[in-house]
Length: 237
Length: 402
View 1 (spheres, rainbow over the protein chains, first blue to last red):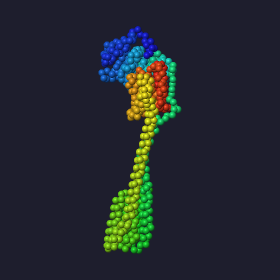
View 2 (view 1 turned 60 degrees about the horizontal axis):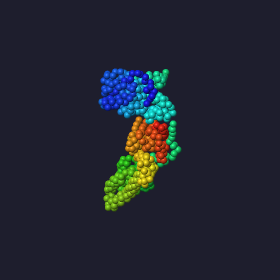
View 3 (view 1 turned 60 degrees about the vertical axis):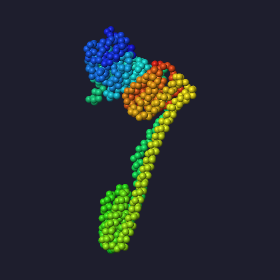
View 4 (view 1 turned 135 degrees about the vertical axis):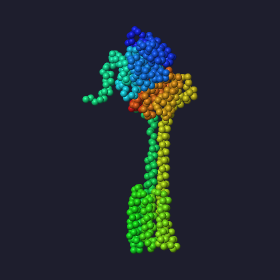
């Protein structure tokens, strides 16, 4: 997990987390996971996103189970993201297409349920400060993205994502690529930021991008190049 | 940092692992064509004979007789015109027959029968049984020409019609004495028997040749198919022999009591041998996704030992030749057999690249046993093989690029 992500969260107020899941046992489990991190506090739980957010309108991060009562709630996810809610999707549905669809809908991050406490805490902390966090399963989905209109990643970004997906150890990826762990994380996060341009616009995507530019992770012109990719297809006069 | 990088030994002889592409028994149509060609070639001689006999008889015997008997013929011009008509028809039909594109049979047959009746009428009573009434001797051969390649029954019908026309002419000319009728019978028999014999004989020869060629082609296809199957079997047997050698050894040692089942090294060898055999068996299974099937087979062996295996696949591998699949999967088999507490096996596949990776905790001990050098590394130059350990994890990665 990423020490620097944790270090940059300097708010005195604990981060409020709302958990939306239709299985009480999962809610309790996630609550227990988050309890070990003092900067996090669970402010509301329930199986209906609207009810949960009514009872905790100031929740900083929403942990959303993608399947509620037998239905995929991608539309709800898109609605929440459009209004600027930082939604971390966590799901047992880890097929790459679902993960990419969640990113397109505006999810700040996608967490596979089997990925465990470490990744869960790191993801929520990063999400609260509009910073990307890419757990290994999501890295795999991005590196294997077969869609023709997928964002263009650099070779290094692809390699870092691939090795992170394979090994689940940034230290090992760093040794393998002969770069620092910090650089590995930068490659992975930059790839993630490029995905803020995929799918329809959402307030959460804009926030991720703005913070990435502020942090110096990407330069505006890098993203600009990607954005105008399609318009460059037209012949210039 | 103890990072060792080994790339696939490109120079290593690929050995008998490469199964030659089976020679398709698809010569099928070609063989059938060959059968037809054989039949046609054996038939050709008989066709030449039939054409030569018909035209030679018509020219050498029929024409001089007509000219010699000219004053005695009832209507000599008509006889000559009919002769010319039949000669022209015979030449055309003969040429077309030899070129393999015969003229339509039945219109010509009707024409010949009409000529038959006209010549019998035009020859007159006195020339009824002479060579000048050339239809006796020649017409049978022209029947043979126009009906070539058809059933003998057709020829018999025509000859019967010819006999009836001749009989009507004989009776019409009032030649009803027993001697005349006997002569008629002799003529019918004499002029029909030889054409029938040649026609039937050649048909039989052609049929025989065709059936022989068919048989030969079928035998050939069978032999080719068996040959290909045999080669594939040999290749697999060789592979099996190499893989099962390690299994044989450890089993023999266990049976002799030289190896102790409690010894972790012995157990490791057993697992490794089992994993390789299992993968080899999976290789010949007909499944939609053979690479994943083979990896699952290898993972299965480790899983049975209680090692939790995380197998994650992203994308669908393109169809890969068995040598590439082997080179992708084999290097992982040994590591997988060593896995103690957990293993993560991932496949990321796209149309132009397949990356397989196995990550297990680096336990620190050196498992590089004597049989760790993968005996069947595949050695496909398109597959890159990396092996690393950094104290934290042991990392095996194989990567194929188109």
